[in-house]
Image (cartoon, rainbow, N blue to C red):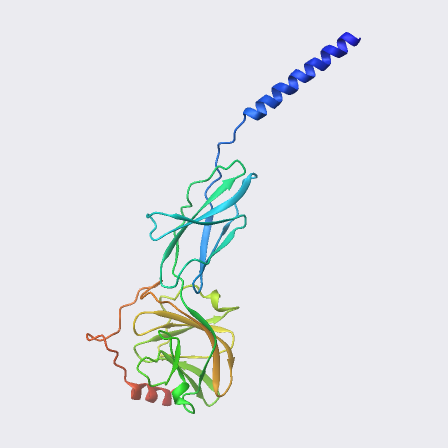
Length: 275
């Protein structure tokens, strides 16, 4: 009986050694699949990336890479175990292309993601105030290119506020377009300028909580979201794209000399004859 027990013990020890040896010799060389469904949110000197989580059980983390063209060289930016990442090293006015990889617990890294994801950070501002042009003409307009309040009849004015007998409007000149994008939770809900649907009357009714897009005379895009309206003023958050024609294309509406020409009296007549 003791002899049989000893033989059984030796057999179990040898079997255990073989199993441990097989496990120690096993090496996972299979990388995860590249991340998918990547999209970006444009910020002021930052870009936020989101994507779908990989489903591999041994997934460890993601690497983020950035380049200046889709087929160009990509350089490492950072890593995360979450399915979002904020690139705080991005700078306004520069277009970046992003690609991601997935890395498993064995250190295997996937190929770069194939999604075409690019973004151009742009400046933004909060709680900007302009006033009714009928009572306060010198502080009723806004110039996105200089991030500043200007008179409604200033040559650089992109839009101005109008209280028309209790109906509130934002007005643009004939060489500029504007559109109401509807109610939004915040400024970031509108990610791109529309292709069509611009106001034929060159003005829009203002409502708290609505975001509006402006297509400026010199071929830039801006957006603003109304936070507060009173008979004398409107308060809004805004963002302005520095790169000409970025996101959507538009033919420039400048003259041959490159100097803007606007008919201010025509705009005032249009406002007077509204409705």
